[in-house]
Image (cartoon, rainbow, N blue to C red; front, side, top):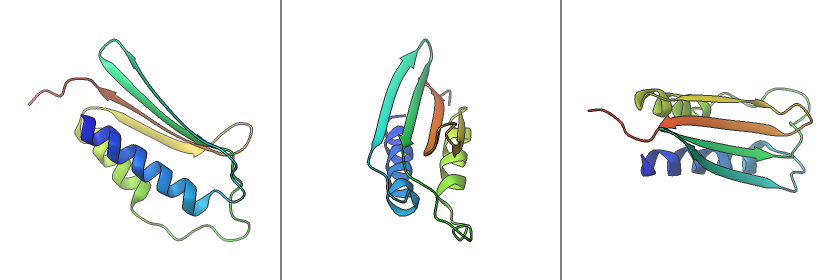
Length: 95
């Protein structure tokens, strides 16, 4: 589980660096509630104007990693600007 949280956080930070124009802040929040861990990575950047960035495997890979562990991942624009990636993962993965 530690490795999954690390890799999702790493990819979310990489995406913020590549795509969040004029970002001045990136925040990582990690919390545990019961049997779940919640990772939330937010930035205050602006999307690149014009065309959408070419599709990559970052968001898809993060979502697949979360699903393989029985969790979920959501990513998208924040209500007041910026971008949010939030993963909810079970603390223990049954084998």
